[in-house]
Amino acid sequence: MFPIEVTSRELDARLLMAAHCAAPERSVFLGQDRGVYRLARRWRGGIYVGKQVLVGGMKPNLAKYRVLKGRGYRVLFLAEEEPVFGEEGELDREQFLQMFHPNWLDGDDVVCAWGDFSAEVFRSVAGPDAPAIHVTGHPRFDIIKPELACLYETETLAIRQRFGKFILLNTKFALASNLPAFLSVKNAFTGQNEKGDTAEYWLNFHCYHARLQTAYIELANRLRKEFPDHHIVLRPHPGEDPACYNAVLGGIKNLSVLTEGSVLPWLAAADVLVHTGCTTGLEACHLTPRIIQYAPDVGYVFEQHLPSLVGAVCKTLDEVVQEIRGGTRAVVEPEAERRISRIIANFSPQVMSSERIGALVAAAAAKITTTVMRGRLAELEHLARSLVQPRNQRRRKAGGVPKKFELFDRDAITAKLRVLEQLVNKKLHCRFISRYLVEISAA
Image 1 (tube, rainbow, N blue to C red):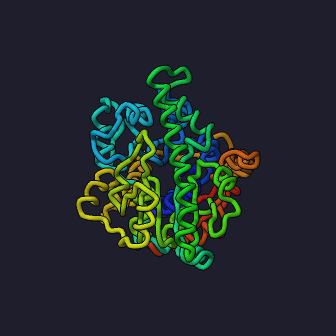
Image 2: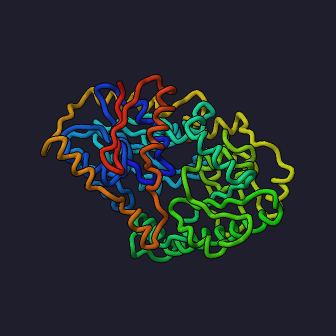
């Protein structure tokens, strides 16, 4: 079972994982996370790869996890947004382990750590009955490698034809523009009755992101004036509400606010990426010629420093303009690659996360028996078809957060699987059980 929460962030990596994991005797069910869980709890035995059945925080919610364990599942925990830190001293271990703690899992499960760094943190607190911890990396850093660019080549060419030369601004300010998301994160890690220094921390945290968001809006307007031969594309994070940007930037010439598609073809098509210090700066290293982290001095600092190892770091608008005019192609120095690979194992060209996870899935599959429970397969398919629309897509119609499940297109998925067949050297079959759920198997 491969759940997906945000297609623009996860779909291509999940398809690559599915291609490695599928076998004649083993199918992969890939789809919207709530639907996958509802389907999984109707089966006896299986493998669940993801993090959605574990809700971290001061009071972790393991109810869904316990349901699957009661049904005989093995869980391979794989975080989607493991914190990207630069050095040991920058890690808030307590908060890190509130997001996920290895002792939440049973001993027959597996923890897939992004790198040696997080694996060491998990092992340092793991109890005697904790699951095995393997360093796998994450498949989203497989698909940035040059040999996998063919997976989104069609989208890349279409973007270039549409915009020509363009500068991509990638933002991540959901904790400023999406107050329900901010409250959800704050309450998960501090509770609803925080006081004193804790309350002030979250006030500063919100204000910091709000000031950065304003700085990036100013940057977008400055760049479209300085570079009239380039289009400026501002791409909000999936958790942000684009209405915040459209209200201010809408109608301005040569500037677009867009959320469509995966970020990877946009990175491959752009002449320059300007990012906030998030993992997108690392994903761009093999895709975008020029990479800039814009880190204006806005007071309180909550930075992840690892992305600054790729490309240039600019503190002012003038520095960004100067870097775009005269900067050089982004290069990852050997020492930077070593440091990043310690956090994200498959940032190294020699490591493929999807292959490592595929081997772990095969090993887990050999130890379980999968049978259909509570009815025939046809009845389960009827249940799957009843999952007509993901919750976050319904919320979008009411003016909430951006759509997070908009790319689950039958033709696009089929085309990507045809490309993946050549890469994994196996014949792949896909069967769409519902609009948001597909079964992938191999001949």
